[in-house]
Image (cartoon, rainbow, N blue to C red; front, side, top):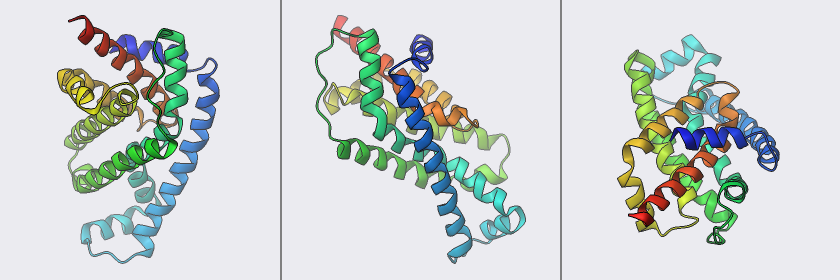
Length: 223
């Protein structure tokens, strides 16, 4: 895991990933702004009947909007992955795995649809966990990292692995390495809460997952 992360970091600021990183930064900032606007509309423009949520908005105002948007950002960041997955994966494979055959062809619609599916699950589950995030100190961080660690590890790994393996094989690999995957996912869930770092985290996570998948696949083939 640490080797995968180290390699991803080393390649982050060199061509051609550097150019993709700039595009990812722009897309992430745009999505975060749109997310804040949508949260604002939901909390202020639409009627709702959750007393505790109404009280939170009244007391915290704009901070509640930004905070909620920040909580939901890990799921929304999956859309960025769908947009730039192929560029990042091809750059990593060209540098570290030049002998690989061409990956399975995937349309932009297929990639974005997969990312949107995971983003929807992430948003719904994080909204359900929102009372814990707001009112249960200490436990809120644990729940956030565990929940989003699972979601992110599954999302990023499947998006990368499905380029080169059938769904059943991908599920078996993920199940066989579930503990390491969970740890990697929790790490990226944390990265996605850190200002500035969260804007480059989708590219970093994608690159790291390419290395993880190739390592898992090589060990499986050798066994």
